[in-house]
Image (tube, rainbow, N blue to C red; front, side, top):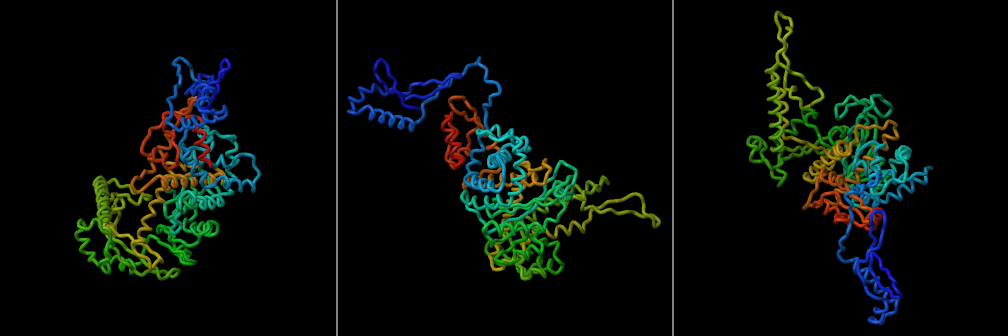
Length: 576
């Protein structure tokens, strides 16, 4: 809106007006008539300039009041313009607010100094990251997705592929700067770091130096690359590395951890991993310089002496009050103790890392769950025995056929052609022996047991992060082929996961928790429809979650129409 002076036959009148569009034409429409200037000067004893200043004040007061209705003419027989984009994706605005709060403009300004390129690397990277969350697709198609944003790309499609090699070369620098700057958005918990590995398959069938055949998590016969991921104590990604698919994952921890110590600005922390990554070398590396480790320990892999000591009936306590208990009584009637957890502490050590503490826990609830699952598997195994149709799945550790043993019948000292099958009760009993048991090893021998166990229980978040990347962000199958393009692809996926986790932390409270699935679907449905000359109409459903997003990020797009100028201000503010 604006103040307009209309002069007619020598008489000046003041109006507050607004611009409206009628088809392709824009015209002014009077909203409020303030009166004749000469009369106002006489009534208020003002000069003409003072009256105009008073009119501007009235305009400001009017703009602060609830908006007046907007009259938009629509014609049922008028065709819309050909090739005109009307619907836009606006969910990226919340992600963009976080992205630029991490000072990404400064990061890419520093990168620009070290490289010679003419395109906007910051815009390309941010668009790739937002597209990975809102509409995951190939790099080629991500350009089309960016064209659906309120701010459309100023770069060309071929610039995206040129940018990948630069992003790959700056991967470590970007990770380190993103960690430091993310503290402006949400305080990072670097006291505890979780580490795990996964792998991603390709549609290609040819190997190279990075893409190798290995043990695929999806059991697919395709080349894979592996990712090692560090996550902080709040479940927010910290750093990652990519290595070839045929390598053992255990040696991947140390180089990435050394990179964190060197470039991230902190060096004392507790590393928590699963048993597969808790090798003696990794434990030894985190037993020096103020670092520590908490590693899950497989009871089945202990030597017989340590295993018997860990699972016998001595020295058990209840975690809730640390009082001694008789574990045999609890096992005899577990239904009375379903909500309790019991533990014992055992001295444990190896040649490389002596003096460890092993905490063994027993959960009646978990034992009942494992027993129920096994009984269902045994029922399926018995049906296989009855039908004599047994096919073992070597790659499936939960295959019911693992409980079946094959007996070759003999006749006159010769092996008969027919085979008979039966349930291997020894194997069943051996598995049942471990029901409800769980163990961790640590060098934090003076810390409280409940605190150590609480840290170990937090490992589920890194598994969820891998699931989000693989399923929701479709990080695999990987379509790019060159090594630098592959690393840049995972840098984009990592950044998308980081932004998403920071968004989760900002909007979730103890009273109100929003799931990852709910947040992602809300962002993807958050579209607006442009009405030329007037503004944008929300196309999404207003929910508690959209209200929470608007509350946290300080802007609203859920009014019946968002004026064009207001939307421009919202976009500008998300990039500050």
